[in-house]
Amino acid sequence: MLLAHRSSVIEDIIDLDTYPIHRLDSPVRAELVAETRSQMDAHGCFRISDFVRPEAIASMLAEVESLRAAITWAEMTHNPYAAPDDASFPENHPRRRFQERQSGFLNSDLLPADSMLNRIYDADVMTHFVWECLGSERPIYRWADPLGCNPYGIMDPDHVFPWHFDGNEFTVSILVQAADAGGIFEYVPDIRSPEAESYERVQAILDGSREGVRELDLRPGDLQLFKGRFSMHRVTRIQGNTTRYIALPTYVYDPFRMNKPHHAETFYGRATELHTSRADLLVDGLAE
Image (tube, rainbow, N blue to C red; front, side):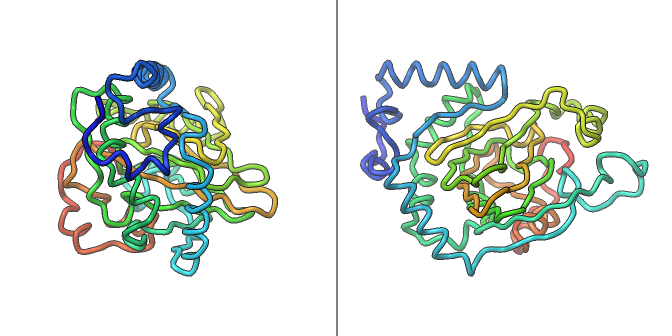
């Protein structure tokens, strides 16, 4: 049985021969979903190698490089929550630990309508597959955030992206171009939950502890499914002369909410009127 919603729209992007995510009756798909759920439960992350076809990756690389003039660059410091300083916490508290960051984003609202990345993100086939892989009883949705719902992340040589949490629950990363060296994704699975911020564990990682830290060296075409709101993560410093490009389609439980204005400004360089109007929407009690 084919999942209804124009699988042909993505058949030249996703390797549906190897990964028939559009066929609900496929035993290959069932095995992939089962393995993904197992790894997500155990490690909070899963990689599917060569998920996106090489020709599509080449097109995505050309797309983001053609729009470099529109990239929002940041050279700044921020805490893991992309939140303002809060003097009500002790001086060395994680909420007051500001780390160096250099990186850029090609914001979602700047992508052409027929962008390869938009085609992936807009496909119901993809959303349904991600939902099944998570094993969640709750439905997931594409994100309402107009800047961060499916941007490209860019790190030039010597850039570093420090420890942080995402504003959305789940991120699907697709590496478009790897750095010569460095640019390793590091994460601490499920370090916090809506019931517990686990500030002591967060502080230990910020102080250099490697307890619970896992690494993933993505390759172009790989798809990574990741619990970005609950697992603190970073990308190590870029070495060599090659820019790292990564596509970041994101998914949420609540399709209405979006990043807080300060979070949007910190990551994407600006906030919209929608960010301001929805700033007080109750999410899950976690620090942004």
